[in-house]
Amino acid sequence: MTTVDATRIKRQHTARLRRGDLLSTVVYFSVAIVLAIFLADGGAAYFTNIRDLATGVGIVTGLIGSDLLLVMLLLAARVPIIDRTFGHDTALAQHRKLGKPVLYLILAHMTLLLIGYGITSGFNPVAEAFNMIATMEDMGLAFIGMALMIVVVVTSLIVVRKKLPYQFWYLVHLLSYGAVLAALPHQFSTGMMFADGTWARYYWMAFYVGTLAAIAIFRVILPVTLSFKHALVVSEVRVEAPGVVSITMTGRRLRELKGKGGQFINWRFWAPKLWWVSHPFSLSAAPDGKSLRITVRDLGDTSHRLLTIKPGTKVSFEGPYGIFSEAARTTTKAVFIGAGVGITPIRAMLEDPLLKANDATVILRGTTAQEVFLWQETYDLCVAKHASLRVLVGKRPRGVATWLSAEAYSSGERLSTLAPDIKHSDVFICGPMQWTDLVVREAKRAGVPDHQIHAERFEF
Image (cartoon, rainbow, N blue to C red):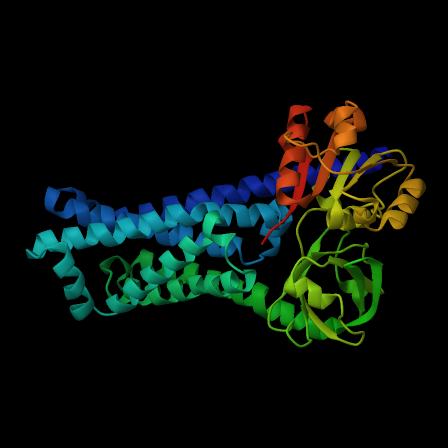
């Protein structure tokens, strides 16, 4: 690794940290702006007596909940600066973490307003709900938006999500857009805080329009435009192992597609029973300007159908996404750990020109030798990069929470022995979710700082 490369990595990492701090500050600042505008437009008057207190707190919880709901949508909107700064996985993790707090805030908003209006008008809260729907403009839509929000959050809980087919969960999750659109009208037609001429009205209109525009541009317009521009088609389907194929796609002007080894793309194959849902797969070879390649393992109905995809099939796509690539590098050395089909993005990352001789350690895991996919290609790249390569084959030991094979575990192998420089390396881990969690845990025990651990988990 040259001094120039080390400087570039440090500069790249520093820039990403600064962008992260800036974006995080913007989120906190947005909440502060909401509260400041509320108080500036006379909101403090709600806290001058007990009778109006419930209404005032209800308005505040609604404003903060709406603000964070829009932040949630932006985190899932594939906005480039968010993706390049935090990575797709981290952005979606924060999106999920906000789900329940946002729901609680909006539920509190509804409940407290029912209580506040009920006290003021002399009705009980239940009767007040029906009265609001009957007499207040767009309030029925607001209650529908609340119901949709509850459905989205409940189906996003891990215990529920694991039991749902991905396609069903995805379709239900689209209701979040319906929840926002249903709740939007009442804020402007009913809420006095958004009256004509107020700062609140201009701020919220800009926030809503900006968020919906970001979703439309980065989730719909840009993917459609790029798909037509590059006109991808399947050019080759090659069997790598039983139940595993590599799919190569060619198209137009692929040098303009700024993908990196290790990133993933949402693919939509225009074939029977496949066209109606996209499939996220990592690149298993670094883009060379001529073709793109993924490697798919038969893990269910959808991936099973991909094994028989025909050359000539048209492909549309979203991406590339994620920073599971050289973009996440913080040090001059790297340790790559992959299991099963998780080896494929690791193999692609070994083509990174920033990865110099003797800078990499590669650890591959498989229950059997046949599950060490793309073995020969990975071996050849390790030889070319003078990288240390370890292959651990076999089942894990019974009764032990470890990612290692039984043989490696019993012989005393650990991350610190397999990769002696691990404390001073970036650690890239890709494989099944629970297995990946075990590797991450051991990396932390070995003294690797959190910012040097980069994990790609296979989950929707």
